[in-house]
Length: 452
Image 1 (cartoon, one colour):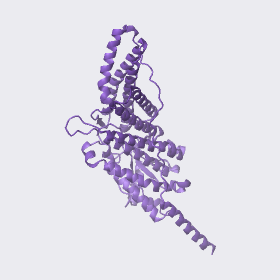
Image 2: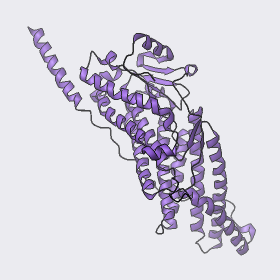
Image 3: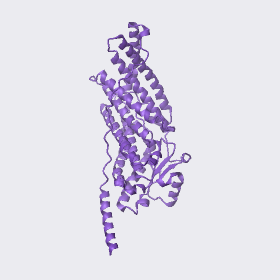
């Protein structure tokens, strides 16, 4: 990855040759699929995956002095350059490997690379927002380019600072999901037996999921509307509204999955609580699937993203039908028992189907594998086949075979309780206030000079 510093005219010429102008008047540039050379580096195997992260979009160098040098003070230009260059370098070095879930690395370093890159983005965002404050016309001066992952086109560049804000929020969310994935990979216990996941890690992961959802929710509700319709149409599929919404719902769905696993381990959680969590999980994943169903997610990362959502949706239905079946079985009528059997049989079928969906996900490029089972699915993979079989046998002994309900009952509908964090864009960095004061003083002196 080339650095911002030292870009000469020859380098700029080569960079421009790599990209194809789609709408020059709007400043929207997108690379040709055939041009995908060494920029978009994709791993062949991403290791163990509990939380799927569809690659990390990586920013390309920008020379702020070329476009802003005549409009802003040297201090602001240098701050923008330094902050963004830090992100370019870190993302360029770590991006291609950061999705590889190496347990040893995560244990030794505690995910510090993720935290450092996240901090760099948080430091950059308030300074960047000065370019869009109060409709600042400078927002159209700089052309920001990012390497895509889910889109067929290698990179997308736009002369709009809101595109840069959107890209930053997306990357912050993907880093959070990466952090959650590392946190949720069970560590081998001290006794060398069954890998374990601490209660602390599970609770921390829920906070991270909610935070990631907050970044994405802010992107959809507060940043996308700032982009003109033509810009939104030319966004890469990585940043399409449907993908952003699906990722937000995915984060919340996985957060509820952790909550359900904790409820399963708790002696105080009732069947009703577990059923509600499982049914909510179904709704999150169903809505995630609805949002990406018709999007062109056809290449490696994108297709794998679609398969992940499909797998988790089926898995959630297995959990929901299982707990719904157990509650129905508590009834005293032949009808409720028949419905309970139908629900448990549906749970068993969905469990079998989820295993096939899991295999399809892991075998899609980039290759991946499951971490050791824990929580919800560890429990349900053992309980569903056993309980479904025993309830069918018991009810067939009690009632005639013909009276057993064959169609699974409708799942109850619950309001979704887990919400995204209420993330708000930070205030503009104070250095912009100094910039405006200085500019005002320069303008006043120039006016007095002209009057003489």
